[in-house]
Length: 148
Image 1 (tube, one colour):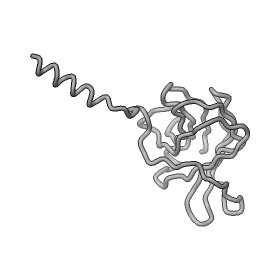
Image 2 (cartoon, rainbow, N blue to C red; image 1 turned 180 degrees about the vertical axis):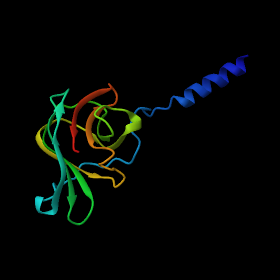
Image 3 (cartoon, rainbow, N blue to C red; image 1 turned 45 degrees about the horizontal axis):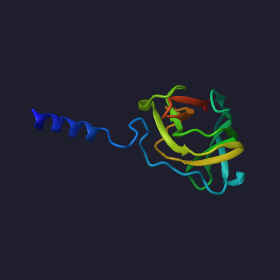
């Protein structure tokens, strides 16, 4: 009986890894160090954020780069910091791990800032037209922009 208890305990601890199970999975891109000059960008889609928490406001703009690739630019972006906050593209205006693709983790507070991230080519804007700023740890939607 003692061996069974030890085995069950080992299985439980092994399945409770230190990694946050709710955290979106993918290679996250860091913010672009130097904002890309407007002459190198063409607007594909844009929308204002509807803020729900942490004083989030601003707009989400998806740009195509002249040399190829796309970026998401959070412009006039204001948000107070929170833990475990991500920029995600989603199939709907609410968070569901199954319906989102993560772009990057957001660290810190912003006040009327421009923050840009490279977009993975796997993000299809026709199927994932909502930009979410979401805190996974506390299941809190900070804001959403519909870039359809």
